[in-house]
Image (cartoon, rainbow over all chains, first blue to last red):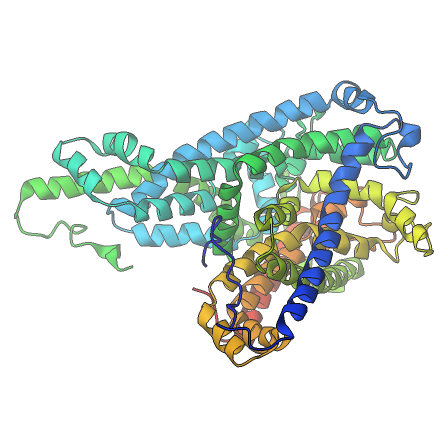
Amino acid sequence: MAVVTSSGEPRTPARAPTPTTPVRPRAQVIGRVVVYTLLTILALVFFVPFLWSVSTSLKTLPDANEFSLLPPNPTLAGYREALTTFDFAQYALNSAIVAAAVTACNVLLASLGGYAFARLRFPGRNFLFLLVLATLMIPDQLRLVPVYQMLTGLELINTRRGYVLIYLVQATSLFLMRQYFLSLPKDLEEAAKLDNAGYFKTFWKVMLPLAAPAVAGVAILAFQGAWNEFFWPLLIFQDRGLYTLPIGITQFVFTYQTNWPPLMAASVISILPIFLMFVFLQRYFVAGAAAAAVKG
Amino acid sequence: MTTLLEPTVGGKAPDAEPAGRAQKRKEMLVGYAFVAIPMAIFLAFFIFPMVYAVYISVFDWGVRGKIESVGLANYQELVRDELFWRAVRNTVVYALEVVALQTPLGLLLALIVNAGIRGRTFFRAAFYFPSLASSAAITAIFIFILNAGGLFNRILGFFGLPDDIAWFADDRFALHAIVGLNAWTTSGTIMLFYLAYLQSIPTDVYEAAAIDGTSRWRTFWKITMPLLKPGHFFVLTVSIIGALKVFDQAYIVSRGEGGPNYSTLTIVLQLYRSAINDLRFGYAAAMGVFLFVFLFTVTLVQKRLFGNTEAS
């Protein structure tokens, strides 16, 4: 699967060398108008839900269903309530803790493993790598009961350690690192070998720095995945004190459905960090989508 | 692909270069050390659970472990369980609708973004972003927008349409409302996939069409669509499999119950309820096995239908 180039020029159908047909410009103008009209409508459809939630998070409860994008009586009360009364400060911290742990483990283990799969020779290497790819075919839902039983047996249900353990390293992270190491030239490694540097030193001092873009990509995708993850935290975290943001939002919906301003504030708090990451690090996310293609 | 059995394995190579052999041995040990933890995780939490799920599914299995062996009774019950089949029907209806909606929408977005417009990077980002945001947060936003007095009804009212429907609380609409929400979320990903395939179509075919004076409409149907066949295969496979596993949104809008009136009960939601609410782990494991076989069959059927056009 080809990667979407972030800078690449659009490949529009090339025009005929000379515009011999006089109708052409007019048809083109109409085409433009159609495209931009469609674009405006679609952009509205995609923006409005986000804008509406930000706007509501700044409204008072009586104004919440008012049909106005600008809050008539703007207030931060929704955020204050969400963060204090409804514990979303705690949930955000919990999300940050598990996401940071998952990210650190993924980066470390996937880069070591990816390097070994790409560059070291050992018997069974290809078989083991096929096994890694095969795990992508196993639906999480089939694993629900057995993993729940195993974590219960290990007394890791309702602990952060249990959650981080099952996410310690993901197949996609390993795959991305391996692909990147495969694409690096071999001469630097060989120079290090001649210097009699050990394998770990070669990896740590020479290869890992070269793989910095892949490391950044893996880190960002692992963080985003763990920050948003719903299925396993719902299963594993049963104490309120451990809830991550998505679980906190869900419990809020179940309990106080129509207290809209704090609910929208909590949603904004949950979306904002990923939004900022996306704005500044867009190309990694786009590359991640291409990596998701591997799962097919 | 065939380095599986390197000559070094048996250590049969004659004493040529003992230093080289020691080196290879060291490389091998380092290799195993580097992949040891990941492989342990994959074996323990992916490969083994697959087998374990099948094992659990032939037991009456409670929260404290197995109670008694029941053979295939869980599967027999599954076949007769009307609520489960309701969930299967809901899931299939959901998957067909969401794929029918998000695939053309994703393709349309890709074509627009690819059409040499101003600000294409911006629009591409805007359309893709919903795919990256938390499913729980987005579901909360849609619960708000689709509530009886919410924004969506206000807009319908503005156009003189019925404006008092509580979309997620009405069993005629709840499942379709989830379709709408997820099509909105996922079409940006579909767009990115199609963009990659669109950009891999060589420009000279378009040049030829332009010289022939073929209209854009015809060019699209006669050239672009057929050349996108591997793209269609990939997009459909990924999105159908993803749609059949729908859970988060159904769980949140129905307070974990699949309501109203079981209209949003999906296969995975019913599996979750059997395990976590009813503590019937054996039965839930049987559902998991069913789901796996179902997804696998769907993938095989799609491979058959689309022939050998798989993307590289």
